[in-house]
Image (cartoon, rainbow, N blue to C red; front, side, top):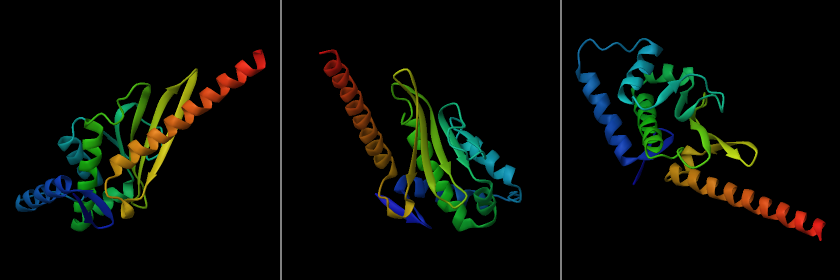
Amino acid sequence: MAVKVGNSWVSEAAYDYAKGKMEAESAAEGRETDKKNSVLSELKEKYSDVKFSTNTAPFSGKGGNNLAIAPNILKQMESDPEKRLEYEALIYDCAQGIQSGMFRREGVIAGGFIITADGGLRAWSISRSGSGTKRSLFDLDKKDKTSWPEKIREKIKIQRKKAQETQEKKKKNKLDVQV
């Protein structure tokens, strides 16, 4: 079931996880939250399988486990507990998508997520396509989603179908020319 946190829809598991972590951290004494790097370091510790960065340019990572977060979002996370909860839950869902193999399908060279400076969410991938490579970028509307991983899968299926239809047309055109 999806839960709305701030401007994002996240899974109930992500919300519970992020809320539990925040409560545990706020209960701990001597917690430092005044550095952007400490937020990023904490995220790297929590999600060791995910490659975090602040480079939000699409197609900038290697492998299928990339998550880029805009520096201003990290700053918001350090100073606003509500934003921290929202983005921690979103990051949890991204990490779950990464761990489920969303970007480990045949032909995919690299892929990941981007939390943009305006708080939006994007997914990107680079895959082998025939003799070259294909780049795909998906903007995900957090305000209108019930489950964005399904939307990504749906968009990928549509792109695959279009690519297959294009290949079939090319083959048909070659056959027509040869006849």
